[in-house]
Image (cartoon, rainbow, N blue to C red):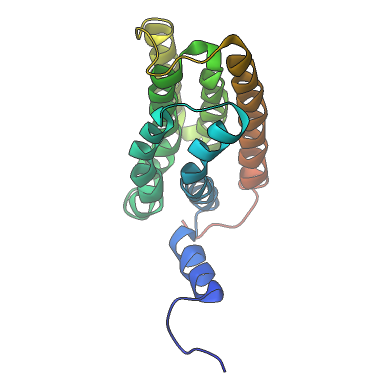
Length: 193
């Protein structure tokens, strides 16, 4: 018997796809990346515990950015440029917060590269000033905060830090590929805007 309402897989999927949908292909790509990151965030502490070691739940700090990632499609509906700028900015803020939690040895600052890539792909040629502003903020955050945030909230052993670095290399590379796939061909897709 089929349910006419309620919460089930297909209706959740329809709700999600409706939420991220946009007639502007760059906004739609931004929305998908943002939602996929938000959906992945609850698993981050589990990745760390499973592959690196006990982090004293310092990774729970990353949940502070989850509502911001989840809000990107709503913001993009009201202001396309603001929604597209939010993705790399929220990502960079989350990266630097996580760098404070785990220190530079964790390699978490590698996530600034996909943030910069998302910015480069989300903006149009005529929005160069906005792109340069966002890239400047990302670069500035790194230059000002790298190795200047004091001791990490959780220190790992050298072996754990090496495993953490490996996970973050793979994760940042995977996120970069996801961004590339989401934005590939976005300039050629028709837009009603």
